Image (cartoon, rainbow, N blue to C red):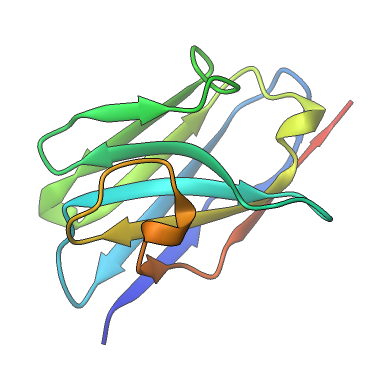
Length: 120
């Protein structure tokens, strides 16, 4: 059974940092990434990383967020610095065997999400 389990969300003040983790079990993936969804909004791409380490970020998080991956642990991380209130959302880990990119509709595996709240 394939599972993606996120952790690391929470409440932080603007300007602060959080580190999200997502552990995959049941198989390995070519691409692992992060998306987020705020209330009343569509799911939004944040960042993704291939198995070889290629990275792709949304413009809104470039320079503030860093995605990384430990293939031996089948884990992807998202280091979030200089957080802003507009970063508040449920953050989802996503993975796929072949697709690399920012379209959430092309990811076949999803975690349950972890809440990130940034207060002003």
